[in-house]
Length: 69
Image 1 (tube, rainbow, N blue to C red):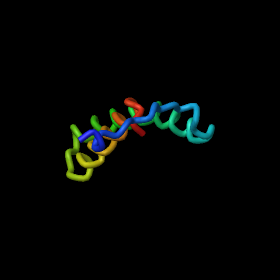
Image 2: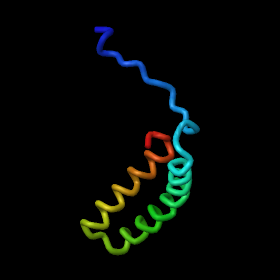
Image 3: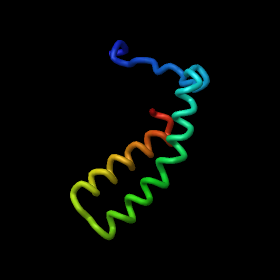
């Protein structure tokens, strides 16, 4: 069963091109305030679209902050 275990390579963000590093940096710092604004908006006007958008934004924020994306 050892063939099922794949070895994860070490992630090094400095190996990415500079423009991708800039996009990730700015996305990481912009995504949280947009998610908070959307959460406040969803509290006052909870439509299905707002809830889905909030879920997607929260997922993207979490993925950016944990360096999965």
